[in-house]
Length: 486
Ligand code: NAD
Image (cartoon, rainbow, N blue to C red; front, side, top):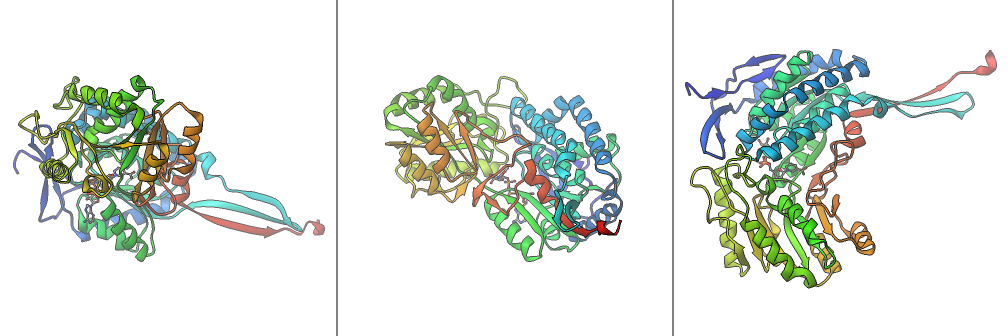
């Protein structure tokens, strides 16, 4: 382990060596090279961090909101100055292209801007005359220590969905970053130190199951923000609520994109290419199923396939690359298994991601599979790779029915310029984030990231007003002042 960086936990404003017995290797997925080791910290280490966060809560929760917001104004400026370095770090550990990584950095900064302007959203309601001389007012208070559990695919954006809003509303935190992309959080902490964040309000404990179970079971933790796969999110929601915590769990996805006969193919093609193959398909808003209306099917598919064949695969650090690697060898092998399953189940593999890929690193080429049916695993499962399942549909109604029969319902897109079809889609599609003539309709920070069905467990989403409500509870004061005595 001599010359490979070993990550430390960050507790009470200090970097501390973990007492972990096990460490996980962190790779550059574009080369397969080992770049760091991350500790699988113990439950005791987590419990200690939770106690520190609890102590810090006592003072931080009493700091005025504008003063708390000022830390985020400072952080916003510092992030702006570090945009490129952050993007390069994302590409190094995640594999996505620099263009995608730059977009991710922008999304993270957006969350800091949302948090900096939290004053208006922290206002309560009041009524002056509820009964004779009676007034009622609500006030919002932070809930306590929050545990944040994040996935590998957005090592910057997803932590920024959590800690800026949690902290600015007066809570303190223990973050557990993904063990596959842990480096970005280390950099974020350096930048929060530069912004002068007080010790103990934001702590990081690296690890996996033991730390997650600490978050879910330790009574100090009052709220849990989770983003990751569906089975883990289901467990996190069930275990966290069993221990009487407030939990929001944003989970897996299988997003359907509908292309109608009147779609503008010229406009749609690059957007659908980006939605399907951008970030190597490792987005919870990826366009993983295409439903193409009969009348446009042949023309659209011919151009979509020709376009996909031109995709440049390689190291995301190279500005000419469009498609970087998937995160680990296991993810590459798992995707190859799905290509095999597609062949065995009678679907038609038009473009095979096992072919023409770089030798080193964990690459999967753009994969397009036609004649997919809803009883096939390739339709049912989230593959999370540059793998698109295509179905021919007779009309919009059939497309919506197919989409709605899936248990995952994060997002859905429609390519059309017909007002009646757009309205039908909006009113009938049971998914939480819809896109009209867009490939990846991820809402900006001021709006909730609002997955439905098994793509989200909880009540209040991250971001928008929901984010503020999730991290606060309301005190309602009813008071009577006898004015007839004046
Ligand atoms: P993952 O579920 O494997 O890991 C997420 C987090 O949970 C990590 O921090 C990991 O350490 C922890 N974890 C994993 N297995 C665990 C277990 N058995 N017990 C306790 N903790 C465990 O997810 P991932 O592969 O890192 O991320 C990809 C997934 O995240 C995809 O399913 C994607 O759709 C989803 N995602 C969803 C959203 C959304 O907004 N809905 C956003 C981004 C990613």
